[in-house]
Length: 335
Image (cartoon, rainbow, N blue to C red; front, side, top):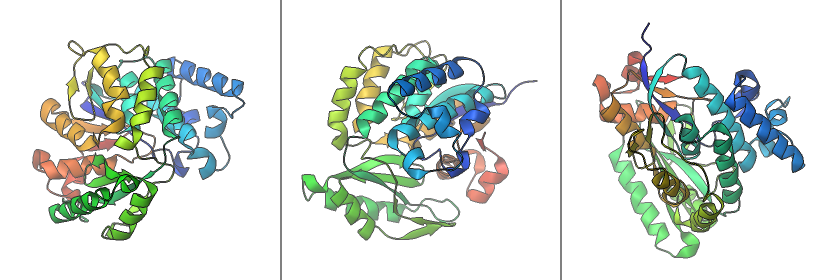
């Protein structure tokens, strides 16, 4: 029986929440991901920190523990990697992409790193990014049917530019283009101003904007020092050609037969850290270049379902015009 073709998307921060408690214990099987998890737990014991296995197996979800930047990054990484292994049995994965932190997972998921080196990349970046002051806001620019609101997008851009022009203490910028959602990042002053001045919207049961807990000003110039430190500490990261196509945060495709490992490493420690991550472009590339049967959102959780769905609606891919027709078409699958 022929497996459906898919482009796989790996989630970023916020994917491991209360409902995902125990996800790693339920999904990690014997193999490279299990070996990487054992290495991670051993390293944490040496550092006098709780193991990731213990954190995942906790009786209750504790935001101070589970949403801590370093813990959250590793919880998401191992959850996604384990889920990807299961999804490979059901789908023919043509290409892999990731949202923000998900790019680091996309590298080993595509074969450009092994599972242990992928964990070391995630752990290193989480440690470095935790030191950067500032934060992120999630805003939306779609209606209840997931159709784009271009007027609101223009208003948001004007506000961001006006605040950023006040000077360094007010630095803010686009962090992630996330389908119909927009992630803005900046200094604490800028974040407070954005929360006050952005139009209030409600889509379904969720109210926007809101600050993302435990998130720094990722994908902005405020992370320049992080990029420099990452380039130094990860200079010997053994990146190789991926086994399948890999889509980066600009929407560019790195193919198994033409990818340059040096360029992938440079992107990972430079542009991916300090420039806006365009997840929307990733999804658009997936639809236009690969024409898969489904767009596959890996766990933990289903945080990418809406952003990927927004992109399908905006593109009008395969006749989809709104949220209802999207769900009827079953083009976006959460594993």
